[in-house]
Image (tube, rainbow, N blue to C red):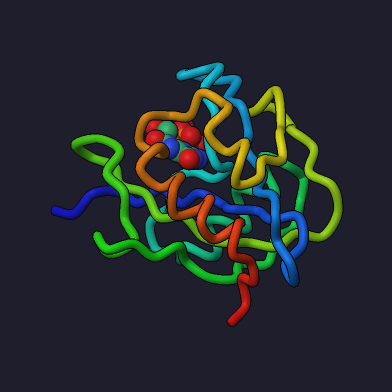
Length: 140
Ligand SMILES: Nc1nc2c([nH]c(=O)n2[C@H]2C[C@H](O)[C@@H](COP(=O)(O)OP(=O)(O)OP(=O)(O)O)O2)c(=O)[nH]1
């Protein structure tokens, strides 16, 4: 059986010319670690629908899902024996507001992306994200 999918949103400040991505600090275990907001895809749900649902719940924000972050390993990052993760570039309307699963938000750019204490599984994806933020545009 395959692993359950977790989706994380790479929410950018400006979809035409993105320079910063949103990071969120968890208030539930492992509390204090930083992640890309999102969560588990439910049965029968698409990755895009799960992202929209989770970001609405967690940040009271509506997102437009742009595209998936690709990698040489097929765009999936292992989390645990039972979970793996995809990351999707998203644009947003309005200001994110942590509802209850996060207690702090930060906009990070390619230079500051490594400054917070990320969940370990996220670290492998950071160079790809930093590279994209430094090179801009998201829509090709
Ligand atoms: N959202 C998110 N989760 C991540 C990231 N990196 C990472 O290892 N994870 C892990 C943490 C959790 O073990 C899992 C996500 O589950 P969760 O508990 O936050 O999501 P959920 O609300 O959908 O799940 P549940 O508690 O209802 O079962 O993925 C990330 O960047 N974003």
